[in-house]
Length: 290
Image 1 (cartoon, rainbow, N blue to C red):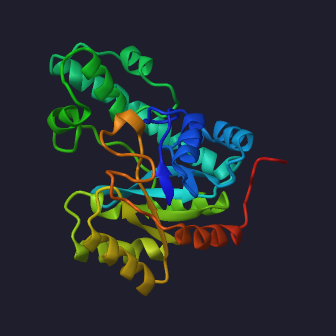
Image 2: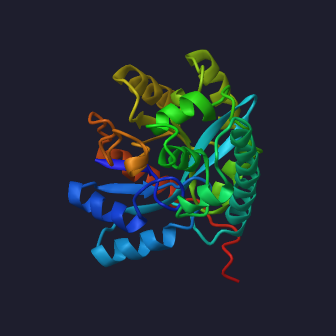
């Protein structure tokens, strides 16, 4: 098995990069990628831990949110060079947008009667990419709610009273930064997007593919076999790469396990080599080494 979509303490996961490497080795994962939200700060530890344990296929990655119309999509960059200046600049802007939104969420929660401060939120975050799961964590800690899902359903998801839109890069900006870092761009969990049907998916795909998209995440924790097979077929028709991942967050996403998702995820090893080969053909531009 492989797992090309995981998160660590560097963003909103509960495992350190070292712990993910150890778990991947324990369960026998052929390969996995660390794709934290809008940050590459966990990748140095990932590299050191994988070298120390002799785990050869720990892939350096990132997950970037991008604005698409009135909604957003997530793009996973795989096999990136963490020294890329262009990628670093884009991620810095993305985190600045997160920080501005976090202040606004705090103000909304205060207005709704919740005793919460930015200091509280930062206190439950171990990384530089702070987001809504950290708000959920502190609200649970203070006894307002019992589960992360409950917090999102009642307060933090789109349409709920504490939701705040954030400024995001365009898909073209995100894909360009990923390519300049030597990575390949994968549209992550497209059918997890709200109200996405097959017609809208194909229309969106036509647009994003023209911007340089490399592949689709066809295997995902919440996909049934029909969706999985459909995305694989579309990828074949459009000459796009196929990827897949659990979206593992450790204890911060109930029921999603590394490699196997909710228990039934199985991403075949043969998915890995085409991804690796495609990335090997991309030249890094501006790696900050000069």
